[in-house]
Amino acid sequence: MFADRFRPSRRAVLGGAAAVLATAVVRAAEPDLAGLSDLTAGTIPIGVAERQARLARAQALMRTANIGAVLIEPGSSLIYFTGVVWHRSERLTAAVLPVEGEPCIVTPFFEEPSVRQTLAVPAEVRVWQEDEDPLKVVAGFLRDRKLADRTVGIEESARFFAFDGLARALPGATLVSANPVVRGCRMIKTPAEIALMQCATDVTIAAYQWTYPRVEAGMTGAQIGALMNAATRRLGGDPEFALALIGPAAALPHGSREVIRVADGQVVLMDCGCTVQGYQSDVSRTWVHGRATAEQRKVWQDVANGQRLVFESARPGVAAGEADDVVRRFYASLGYGPGYRLPGLSHRTGHGIGMDGHEPVNLVHGETTRLAPGMCFSDEPGLYLPGRFGVRLEDCFHMTASGPAWFSTPPASLDRPV
Image 1 (spheres, rainbow, N blue to C red):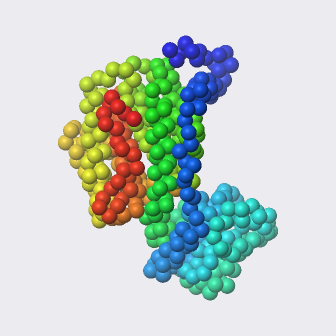
Image 2 (image 1 turned 135 degrees about the vertical axis):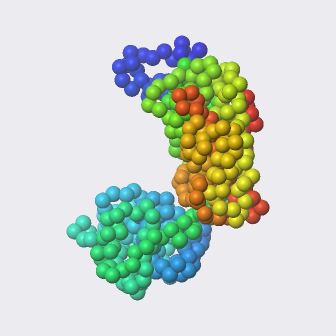
Image 3 (image 1 turned 30 degrees about the horizontal axis):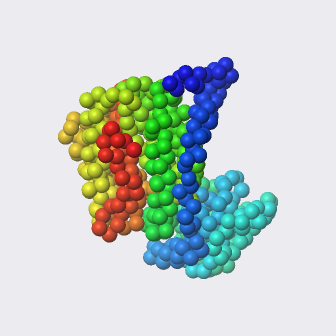
């Protein structure tokens, strides 16, 4: 068994035990990994034409919202509109999307060559020196484009110093949320984006299918996650997370610091995702190692039924919060909750997904945004019994004109969890 084949060494006991044992698990599995092949070879990255269409869409939304320009810091939104892959630091690099014409990239002088390496659309680049204020460079661009007296939208994840600096550089300017523009574009995925998300999901499902039969008694969550990540890489995905929760840790949606090993009758809950060409997957599976109890089977089936109800309730024009309300009413009828109380469902029913694992908007009580074709969500109405175990089944779907469509098919039963 696992415990005999991978007995901890003195080095592992003295320090770094989790990392050492996880590495040992992967090395032992390398012959099996050789049988996996890259599922991402045929993917088509987002091209210039698609990004230019995004900019055109953003400018149309800016005109509707009476916004003259939008400021975006590094992160997924910067990549989405410009292709620029950059990091955040105390030195500002940002994009300014004007309501007309090409965008502007503002970056430190010495970083310009590196920033240009991923710039994927026609754009003006303005640089600033170490002794200059970068927000004054942004303000200068807006003045040159005759937008200094227009309302400026700030992307929601931008840091305060960028907001405050632009307010100082443009006295009297009106700064507002850019959500009507940025969310208005990013929430609606195109066929090209959905194809990349489908590929990422296919990788995650294939990695689950490889990992599941290799989970043995004595393994820790870290070791199971290491197997999952190794398979994901071999299949062509870039692992984002591989959470494996065992026994009572599965009652905590994001896990525990306590190290628990797989044993007969223990629940194993995995929550895993990867990235393909910048787009993410997010899939959870739960099973019982060995023989399941009647209670474990009932809770698993309750979650499966709840997940199905969420999917069936997701129709174009319905408020996103209704999906959360539907499943909570169902769970309350079974004696869980009510609301977010435990034992029951203590987190939202789902979240938006795309370039980020969690994106606006959420399937959560009170969310009034109407579902529309192109929106993508997770469907994960777990049930958690504190101190005992939890069950979460998570599959993502995208909205079509006729209703939701799965990226991954939910599992058929507790006995066939992947």
